[in-house]
Image 1 (cartoon, rainbow, N blue to C red):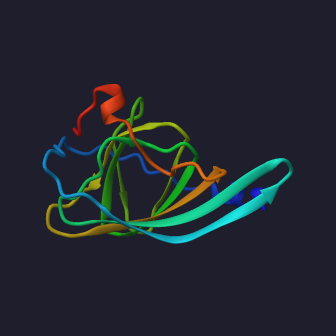
Image 2: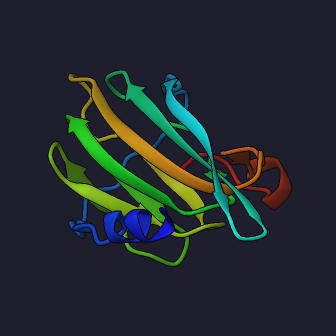
Length: 144
């Protein structure tokens, strides 16, 4: 089962620079858990979760981190993303992306001020840990 998810990890990452925009006062994203299931493995309790994230026009998420790897697929619209230490990028509908565990997501937002955007996020985590953690308070970060 783990090998099947590793194969899904071979995704196309998009690396397109985008103009700087602020996320101050941006409406938050709506999320909906699509699927969640424990995956037994030798000595490990894995849990697979599928979350749909929908950003309204101009919407964004607070600065955050995930304790496990995330595979994403953009269903509609386009996303602005930047993980600390990596360049900002735009991922459009039909594209996939990979996020390593424990990265600080400084920008996670809708790239459009007029159209909504949505994506599916596949989490494969050890046990029942939280899927997302707000790190702005812990690192003195604000949405950028």
